[in-house]
Length: 100
Image (cartoon, rainbow, N blue to C red; front, side):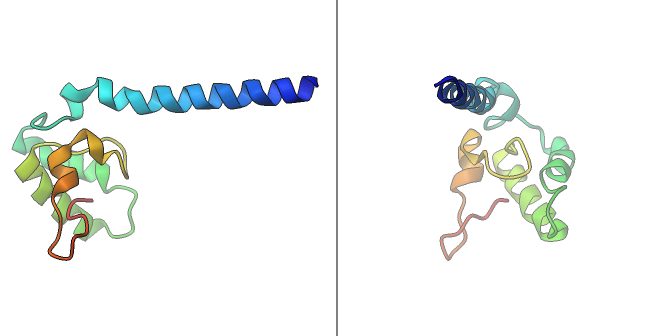
């Protein structure tokens, strides 16, 4: 019985931590939202965004292109595109995401 309570408590703690981490980006929209960057900041933000991919060169090319248009780069190395709608909604002709 104690093991079940401990397991439930652990799951609730993990859920709370994941929700807190997710809302961090939404609360910090001034730092990551649309128009939050100047065009001169795009190279450094794209270097951060593309630092963990094995396809560094194409990632940098498209990230800088997207950043120049949207003036924002989502936080993290992958995902979190909802913070920057322009970055998230720009698609290729085939309908895939244009921005990394």
